[in-house]
Amino acid sequence: MGILGWIVLGLIAGAIAKAIKPGQQGGGWIATLLLGIVGALVGGWIGSAVFDVGINQFWSLSTWLLAIGGSLVVLVIWGLLTRKRA
Image (cartoon, rainbow, N blue to C red; front, side, top):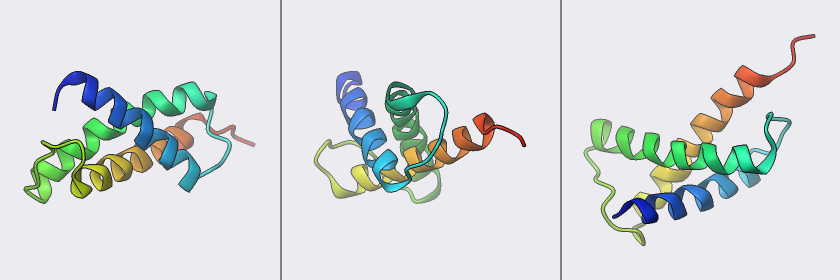
């Protein structure tokens, strides 16, 4: 899968992750979509390192699950880093 495929996958995975975990993460939708791209890369790395599952095909279910899972992880970490302390 090329870089354009990763970008599209990350954008969609970021939007899905935001729909799954709505909240007050800083940055709005643009930051969420960018975090989705990072999350797709993180999910791919974790999937290949831990589960020995490669992310090679755009339409593979494992690719999407890993990208969405990675996006959720990155979104949660971003939310923890940007939350306002009371």
